[in-house]
Amino acid sequence: MGGVALGAPAQAAIARPFDPDLWPPMDGRDAYVAWMKDNRGEDPNFLGQRWDRYLQLVSHNDIWDRADKRAFLMTPREEFVTADNLSRAYEWHYLNIGFGVTITGPHTVARMTNTLSVKPSDKVLEIGTGSGYQSAYLSYLTDKLWSIEIIPALAKRTRGVYDSLIGRGYKEYAAIQTKNADGYYGWPEAAPFDKIIVTCGIDHIPPPLLQQLKPDGIMVIPVGPPGAQHVVKAVKAVTADGFAVSRSDIYNGAIIPFVPFTGGHQS
Image (cartoon, rainbow, N blue to C red; front, side):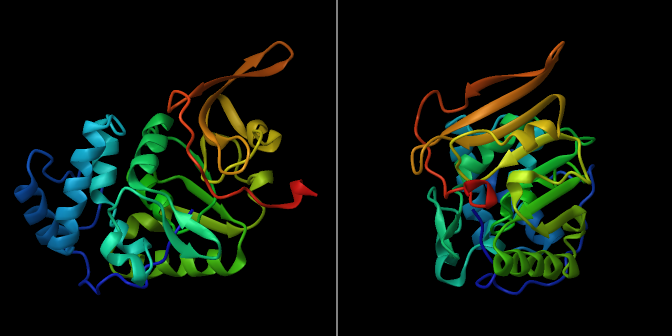
């Protein structure tokens, strides 16, 4: 899951850096677009598309917390898609980004992220950096982020996207620590994590990720056979014998296909 900012129009440096007290107007399209253009230097065309998609997210109950709404509205999705798909950045659908993977549609990203209930103090691990859009989105919810990508060239490309955006003033993306590795085994050196989000499909929840999740921590992960996953919210509880995991389907049984989770565990 992921993309690259090859097609995004060049923008001037951001006039107003992000901080936790920075909130765009959220009560009307015109006010939002004007504020974001003046304060963040972003393209009004994409801002309008972002706002229109935001209204769809709200109407479909894919986003509900105020902080998550701000996170969607602050994240320039157009920076994380390919040049060929730039005009489609805010469409409902997954979009190809090369390397046999995709950038997940905004509705799925929003629902998975809001299900995590990320707090500003939370440490969050993402498995599958992909385009970088998911961690960019998360950076408006917490500044403690770790993300793993297994495809070396994609990991390098996306790190370059982050670094370019940081140079333009998106300093919040400096909080995203990335590495090229097999995400099945997590990031033990940075563990434990309050929240873990997995952006690729697998037929089971990886035990190393459960071990690296704090008690009462939440993981959101697509589980099931290839192309037929259910997006599961897994909550870890400590028991006398170790820990137990409660599961719920965030789409109430609907199948949500994801690119496959690859790595050494398959052998």
